[in-house]
Length: 171
Image: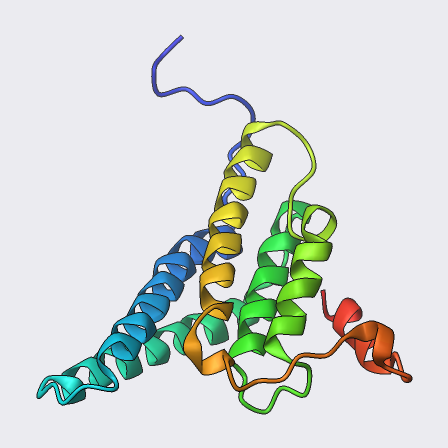
């Protein structure tokens, strides 16, 4: 058997390839936000450069998100990738009516059913490795200081669960 042979069909899709580009861009944005927060309260003359780096990282991430939304889900293994893209886009959306930390809690609550691929084959393992990396990045994203002012919602206190149903249906 050749060392270059693979087991089973190769199941790379445009969405899975795009996701491999999306993950480092999300990491760059999180890192740029952290760096900016570290120096925000100082008189560092490089503050404008750090702000520019953050803006560039956010613009690149937004371009990737827009491109990912245009890609179609061709395989069942791509559905969790799409769910992560929707989640991150909604968390970064300033006009989002549902709160980012609540979105994060919902993601953690349904991670294994909506953000993982079933099975133990090479495709499932590859997708799940990317999804676990995405989960760590979403955890880091929600821990950023710009979410500190955002109030949280406890679903047990909400009389109208229409927003909760809307959240779950988005995934």
